[in-house]
Length: 263
Image 1 (spheres, one colour):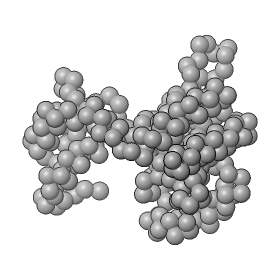
Image 2 (cartoon, rainbow, N blue to C red; image 1 turned 180 degrees about the vertical axis):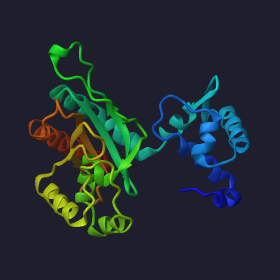
Image 3 (tube, rainbow, N blue to C red; image 1 turned 45 degrees about the vertical axis):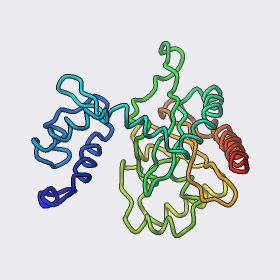
Image 4 (cartoon, helix red, strand yellow; image 1 turned 90 degrees about the vertical axis):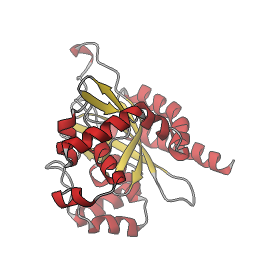
């Protein structure tokens, strides 16, 4: 939590970072006052920073509201690893969506969080007779969620060196919902199950009403950094029915990424 003392001593870069962090998962834009409140910075400071960021296209202005700008996305596209992974993954993701008719996500591990780098949303339901409507989702490309509370994160952690999990455990596990596994012994036991099956499941552990099934993308000789998953509403997605398809998609993508590395 940023305090008043923090705002007295931070650098310009820290202040800019605080402004970017303030957007979180908000898709509707933020006014300067709300940005200042979330960043714990003076409104006058945020106003000056925002004006500069708009001029450089790092923020977009729509009337009184500010949005993350297109230039941030453009810069993100220049990061080689996620860009190459997305390019290899999209055909596999489309096939997986065709099979499951659910949202398909691709994420990488960054510290104690997973970061979503690609997503194909569940096709919209034409009418109630065709099946349950999708549950509202906060998921967005570039969004972050705690790894231990997601199927994507758990399957990466399961194949990570034990010291990685131990280091994250030292910071404690955040409880996102009443179903989040935060007890260390229980989490270690679940990660062991994931290693045996090659598939991780998430039952309303990150967001109520949502389930997910994920499998890691593994390259021989490298630490796991990415995973693919199918996610959907509790009423529509049965993990046992999609687990084999998710696992097969992860294996296919792992092979393609390995071949790319060898080239």
